[in-house]
Image (cartoon, rainbow, N blue to C red; front, side):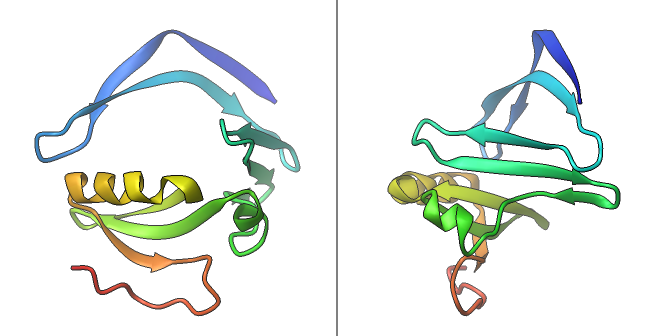
Length: 121
């Protein structure tokens, strides 16, 4: 593992439709194959990223471990681009407001037993 702190952080704007958000890029992390990092949220939930020789496990199991840690997982679309979101269960309403503000739409909830396309236009 190689770690590089970005000091000072690189600050940049994201967001759309008049609602810009400042993000701070604070660290770069390079993993060797079969190394894992765990991010821990304020709610105690864990999110693992594991490097393999062929790429990455980008998330723990979506319909088991993430659910056990209180996360919902979905694919959203914004301006023709698709994103994977992990949402803290207790912050679903805040998340839905964010999607509306950013004009994003949920395509699939990936943690449900049956995956289907959302019709929330």
